[in-house]
Image (cartoon, rainbow, N blue to C red; front, side, top):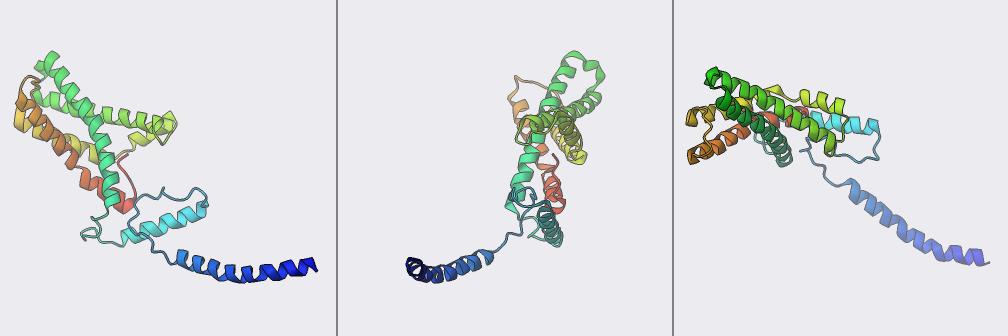
Amino acid sequence: MFFLTTTSRLSPLRSLAWPTSLGRRHFTSSLPTRICQSNPQSRSPCSSTSDQQATSTSSSASTRSVPIFSRAFWSCRSTWRRAGINTLRCLVGCTIGDFSALWTLQSYYPELGMNTIMLASMGCGITTSIILETVLLRRGADQLSWSRAVRTAMGMSMVSMVAMEIAENAVDYHLTGGVIAFEDPKFWAAAVLSIGAGYLAPLPYNYLRLRRYGKACH
């Protein structure tokens, strides 16, 4: 008798809870999905591998359906932010190696000539960029092994790094002749402009690779 009474008391609650769950389920499934998703890694860790592959494939297909020369392709803020961070990391590494090599070679080996010194400095800038990226991939959030971090850093876009070095050194050579003069305020003004040019030159290319193919320069 007690069982029947309890069941009769709970049944109205069940009848009330059932439409509510349906309404909640309907509201959740009707949420709009974001098309501008260039980072396929931002998924729930509970999803299976097949679900992640399906999501990545559908996201890549929707991105590739957008024409490159359309305004919609170049208006993804999250992709610009990610491309900007990647380019900045590359810029720090390239600038450290580039300017250090310029000062060292001009101070101790001036007989090499400015053309040779600037070419060697560009090579040093690319090398330090790869070294810095290797350390960040190993010690940063990615926590890759040293061997995998080196391979990933070596697989960065060489087009992006070379474009950065060419733009940076071209502006510096045009304004100062490539001469390092720490006591001259014009040198520091030229350094700021050359670094800005080095940052802006590969940024659209890095955005394009990240938006179109999901590939970063790092």
